[in-house]
Image (tube, rainbow, N blue to C red; front, side, top):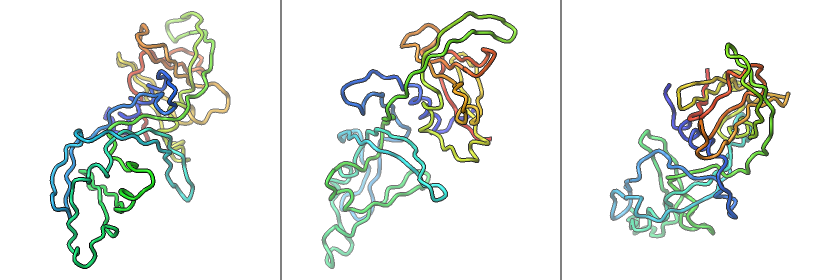
Length: 263
């Protein structure tokens, strides 16, 4: 099963939602390395173009609330902390050499285009990089983590009974709804609710499937529960309890990856 960049990001972040809290609300979840090279090339109207090694620059941090516009509506994506290298630092020693400097020397009419290897591009003004009241807000991100408050824990009693293996005993499970851990990483529009599904995999290769409808569209309070059993727990730290199931077969220990897919 091929994993996309988004899914790799998710498997690192969503399952790290129980980090040790500090007095800083925004660093309660650990940041993880994002994919991508740590070198960029500066070209254009500068006197000294060339390759910049980002790792020699200071690491900056920003907190953002992300949303996207869909069909005229604003859809919340999530709140995140990003660490990376600011365009102010990247361009700071690249001396501007405007082609029409004799006619208009100030840099106030300059634009900066940032492009990735697949040709996607974003255009920024010189002013939003160098003139804002809060500097270093435009980053090339190297690390990231979710910053929303953690969902309230819930406790479910479970009489474990599996198909073909009978009674497994009574256990009490405590965790957060899996849908709440994942909701910042999915778009819950009608088409995705009809066609989306989630695969959760264990370190031993055992896999379970959940449709978007049964995971995100419930109104019976019978959740899939994401349980944090603690670092070093026997059988793996994270597990999933399917509270709505009669059988225990979709109870998953030692969760290693979560894939969000669309049929």
